[in-house]
Image (tube, rainbow, N blue to C red):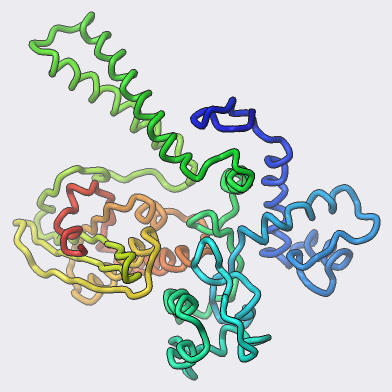
Length: 391
């Protein structure tokens, strides 16, 4: 009964798992907001010598503590460390790698026991000490460690919810994770849902076509179907944008264009895109700048080694493009990307705790300093030059 409708079930919620997903938000607050009064009270009573993730149920626990403590395993599997000043994270035994399936160090060596991540950086603390990493860790751990950008910002180490790009906890992602673990919600659910949406789309277009046949006259069946499809797709796109659960700011004028167009006079248009190469765990970034006549001004290709996340690669590409624009000193620039998640994240004021959020924060800083840059989302066909350059 609790299976999703597209997977052959009735779509009812599993009440216990749904309650766990909601209580998990409070459990995560014990980890991320340790200065709150509630966190201090529970810490003093139940986990004075550690934190929530190392706590025990204790003797004669209250109903509230028993309920929140039941989410401990969920949080152990869903949270990760975001590296900042590197003083709070131990090398082994804590989740801080980018690997979604196993964020822990797998190398077994007495050298890294009880050692902090900060011990793997060079003396200037701006880059990984590659020699130490290659001497101690196995190939898998080396690749995962070097994939983490050594950010020079002085922010602290924080824990974030790894099942969301922004690092903020959501009941939806926690509930889905519990269902996948139980095997009642397939990891292929997204593809099943897409097929169901496609079938729904076809039927809706057919109904719209019938309405047009009765109410309007067209010279051919092709025009009827095209008009019906256009009518339905417009309504469907508006509904999807309104029902978005990302809590990001709405789209701007100029978003969603399907073909490249010349910018306004005295304006430079920069197209940027990223491409992931899983065989060598790298990402290439392509950037193309053209003037108001459509003529090429400059093109640039960069490579980011040890990058395997598509969304993170797109964010880094936009950051590199903004850095490039900052160096060129163009007076007016339109920056176009075909990654809607990145564009809306930069526009949003939502706080983000993840590694992705660090890159977005840097992009926001560039946008505040470069008040002559307009960031737009475009479809892939309007960004093909940068896409081909990245590939």
